[in-house]
Length: 430
Image (cartoon, rainbow, N blue to C red; front, side, top):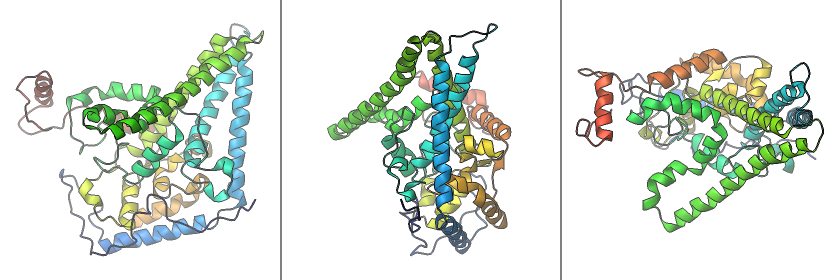
């Protein structure tokens, strides 16, 4: 099999964009509509397009140098993940064995299975489905063929994530990943009474993350909100997608909660109950970890959001600029980068979503230097700092914004009266 890379192509998110605009681009305003400072106001349109050209050069250098070393990397990760999963499931066949009051094989099998599921979702599944390894022309590691260990069908995830989220990163009203429709994570998002309880929604979303993503990819919320106004054709399409999602969930649950516990029951040393709980714990660990990595790349303090009007006629340089300002990194060890699927390099990933993930660490210093030279904030911090920042925002932004002449308590009471059918909050925007 030939491993020579294909010729460099624009990323899917960039393919709709021109390198430059036919019309002169306006200077960015000093402030956003909300009154907050615009972090790119100091850049001229010409400077923004020069940033785009410099990023195109960085991208081309990496994409044109892909080869056997990169192919060996992803095959090694896949092989390690599969051996780890098989070994962990084999250990769980002995989960019923006790030694000094402890079930060592349960702990060993659960820990190994948790890591295997994280690797499969993050460094393998997510990145393969981005097309990062399509250049290898290996049908077993191709974005069109990969189906991952997750409740959401690959086809639906690729649409909502690759085609929508990456194209409209952090654009209010266009990027549904911005809070997943249940969280207010930016001051420019309008507050409603629903967000008052978002610390609870946030924890529940983390624990059940794969099912939340499945519902999100299915656009379940939009269907329920628009059902009465939808055409019969659109309803039929939704029901078809829903059947696909339910079939995927059924297959995942059968594998983890029926087949493998049953295999344990067939041995003298296994325990179906303990194998069942091991799978529950492994899935919870994977869900919480995946959620943690993703929120740290999108919601920490310092990450920007954008108005829909700001992307009208957007050029590739402006799209690149939005990715840099709308993403954040986590710094840490090589092991941590691997376990995050290299999404700890979220800025680099959003700039080049189809670049092999093992190359993000190589270009990160160049991206940081480029941003610092142009007086743009390169958001990065430790895992603890980024997680803490997000959780602070989730709690702080669950409350309405402070307004002169009123209190947050009064705003909440007016919203509650309105929700209960009273007149106290009629017509009030928060």
